[in-house]
Image (tube, rainbow, N blue to C red; front, side, top):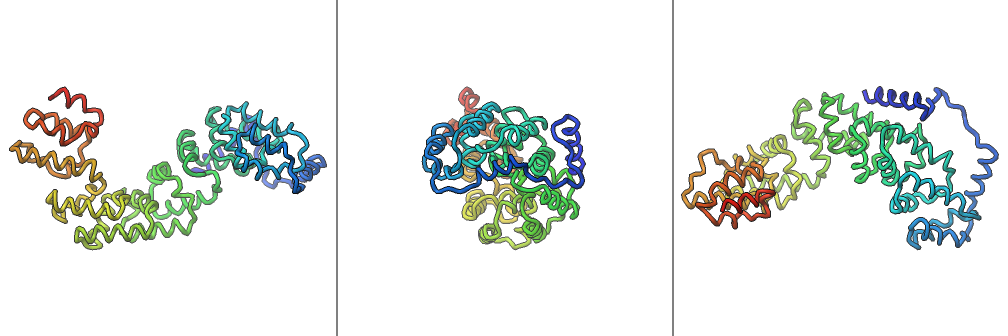
Amino acid sequence: MALRRLAGRVLLLHRAGVVPLPSPRPPLAFPSSESRSHLLRFSTSSSTPPRFMVQYLVSNCGLKPAAAAKAAPLFANLDSTSRPDAVLAFLRSQGLTRRQVRRIVSRKPELLLRDVDATLEPKFRAIRALGLGRADAARLFALYPPALTFGVQTKLLPRVLFWLDYLGSAKLLIKWLAKTWLLQYGVDIFFRNLSTLRSIGIPESRILATVRLRPTLIVQSEAKLQKLLDRVEGLRVPPSSGMFMWVLYTLHNVSESAFRAKKAAVMSAAGCTEEEFAAMCRRAPCFMFAPAELLRQKVEFLLGKAECDARYIVNNPVLLTFSLSKRMVPRHRVIETLRSRGVDIGTKANLRGIMRSTEAMFVDRYIVRYQEQVPELHELYPPRQVNGKEELAVKAR
């Protein structure tokens, strides 16, 4: 499916005149005499880089003196700044800010030696033809400068097209480029990992949702992905389960050593078996994002202060996903105060429902409703935790 989408979009680009279609057997391309002299001129090493380039990189590109001195040898045989001037002028004409230009030059200073019309302009034109706006195209190259060294058809378009198709928008692509360099990976590894996930029976819709949530899941090596799948299988989560990808996502972010520490903490505090712990992971895997010590404290709070039994915690592991200091303790304190004052809060006020209620719902149901009977509720549950309901609570007093 993704291959068909990629092929379709490349065909559209070809029809629009943005890129030519690659021939089945591309002929070998030998550099012209002009290109050979250009390569020779800029590849010759020298131990005495021009002093003016150090100052140029500092003044015109925003590099720090140390970084400029390190990059200067690349320009050892440069006798004028005409080409770097042209590159900088082009980058700024594409909407890149001084900061973005500095980021690009810092990462890839050799780009200042490129021919604008032959190597840089086609890349911006191709990205814009995919539907990215001027600002997004600028951010893409600023976030991942090596993309300016990619071949348009061999690397740039296949990789950008893949992520646009799977992430669904340029906005998400830019968001993830700011976190990790997705474009450094070839599309072949993506397709192999996607094929592995499909082969064990995971629906495409769930794969797509997980890739958008954590795209780095499919850029790891096949061996690492298989090891991750084995860990999920160890928890006896069937691929047909709607929780399979959530468990996969969780274990992708929790190392084996961290998992063992958290497992030991929960099992020791709750007195549960390995099978019961596995069942907890299948029901609410995200509780594993908390540190081992914090998980232990949550279990001890629920068993002690909240007077839950271990079975209740095992059957409701979602309780371990809530903040101990910002949600569990303050809400428990409010409920205990209401009950100690003889307020009838109803038989349906169970711990799971109380903890899972949204902030607005909890405030309306247990703070605002009973504030006249128990005025100190506002102090027990400070306004900073009301999230938009503070004004309502104050007016109700």
